Length: 226
Picture 1: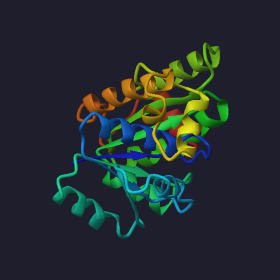
Picture 2 (picture 1 turned 180 degrees about the vertical axis):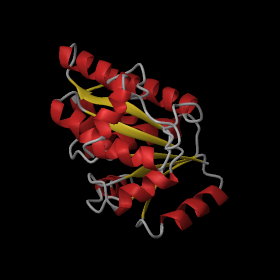
Picture 3 (picture 1 turned 90 degrees about the vertical axis):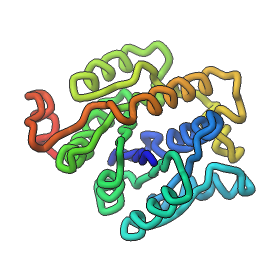
Picture 4 (picture 1 turned 135 degrees about the vertical axis):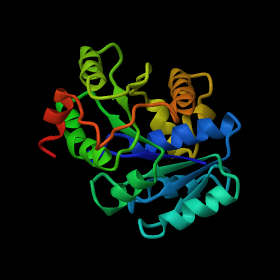
């Protein structure tokens, strides 16, 4: 079983929505998927309650109980566990990073979001975990997205698809669906499917952050303040 953790300390970056949409897309592609919710705000739990038991399964747990939950999911033949985390580098996020095969770091193309990456990236380096950034909630055809992409590419892996800010995502969450379910022919759904294919193909090969191997100078400068 592959474990994908969605982590960043910046609130409003779209972790929960991205987690939901990718989990639904993975399920539609034939993968056996469960979402593990560590965020006490229970955004995903509320979404799941509107689905009347339809997959993917959502399991709310704590940092202390998570290893047991993941072991049970693996024993049941789950292919992917997606972990949603609170917007702070605390016990829950650190536990998710520790358990992850791949950490996804969503970031909006704003200076505040890019600065907020520092503590998350430092925690990932300390635990020597694999990671990738995802530019999320980007304005269409924005120079800010291009500039943010260049900055993130200097720090690590970035897929070749941005998740553009579209009403489809929130409309789907409100309906208890993923965007690929409610608007399957829309641009938002196409972006999520493309991102899911990238995540599925890259889970075993994205860059590993190693504590035994010093990061590049730009990375050292970026995480120094964390």
